[in-house]
Amino acid sequence: MDFRKVNAIIRSDALEKVEQRLHELGVPGISVTRVKGYGEYKNFYTNDWITTHARVEIFTSAKRADEIAQAIMDAACSGTSGDGIVAVLPVEKVYKIRHRAEVLPDEST
Image (tube, rainbow, N blue to C red):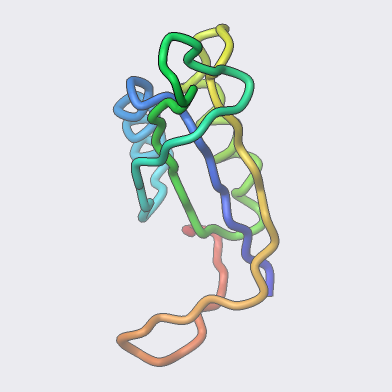
């Protein structure tokens, strides 16, 4: 199995730009969730330091993972602290629930 999961945590205000770039690349699907936390950037003006970001998750073939990660970084980069992170993780298997069958990677995912 040659799947990867591209997992990015980005500034919420960069989400639209990232979505547009991924659409231009022909990425067939993404999941987006709102997340809260802190890392490099902490909001020292609040009691809990927590900030809101967007998490983008994409399952793709190993061949496209680096291209997608680079596109996210290019679109989300403002050059300031707290721009976010991108992680590329190995995926053992992916199943489509409707078909109850394993998905095989190809060049389009």
